[in-house]
Image (tube, rainbow, N blue to C red; front, side, top):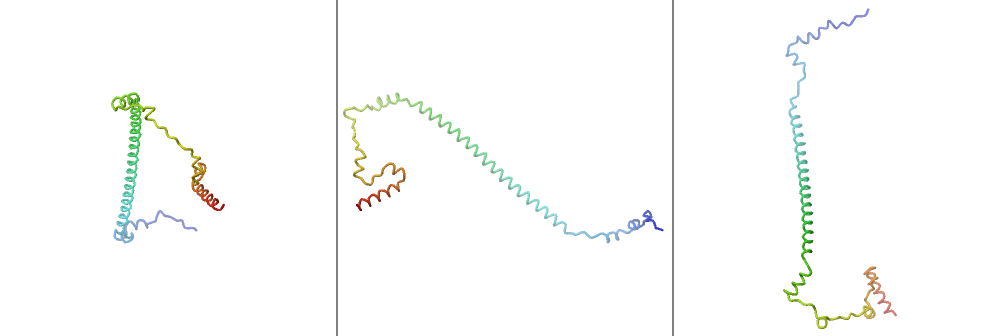
Length: 164
């Protein structure tokens, strides 16, 4: 015959409750007293993270302020440039050639040049005549091609003249 497991009459819990508090303290494990430093470590890490985040936020705020100032200065530059162009247009409108001619003739006593006595014509010689005389002259195509290459061509030409 099998004995039935009857827990209805289990008195072990009742005995546990009747034990004196001193015995319960002996049974419970003692708690470590080193929990306070762990809290300090957590607090220090939180303070460090907070300080770093405040530093980063302040740097971003400084960058945003500089960008704002740059945009304001750009607006001022554009405004001053438009004012400058407007003033240049007004200046060009105010300069009237007829008024300028009156001031030059009447107040400054200027006069037009005399065709016979005050105008001198200068004759310019053709550049081709100088090419024959000056052997260092380089053609315009040579100068545009390369100045160094043209000078090397001139030196080679001089060497060939000497050899002939």
